Length: 100
Image (cartoon, rainbow, N blue to C red; front, side, top):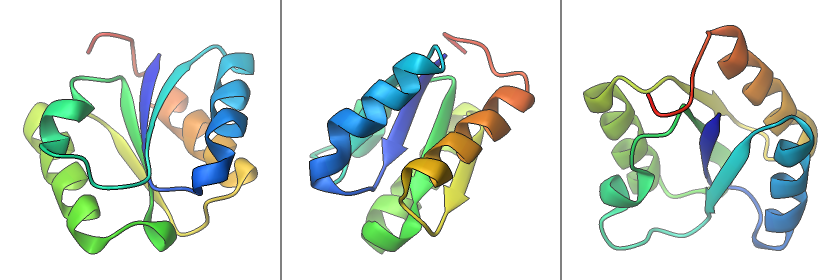
């Protein structure tokens, strides 16, 4: 499943990606607001939002895009590796499929 991560720590990009690879998923990480975030999100299998390390406007855009495109999303206040693993398991439990 392809997953988009909104938030997190800049220096942990590779750790987030490697953990997702071990779980069999691909990951795109956005820690800063890019131009036209809604286009960057695309149509992944799920979105994980780390609310403690991201701007309120990024959270708003991500949630609005997820609801508009019917993409499941999980919010977490923590931005740890364990929080990401729990969020991915929660998304997988919902029966997400790639290319949704």
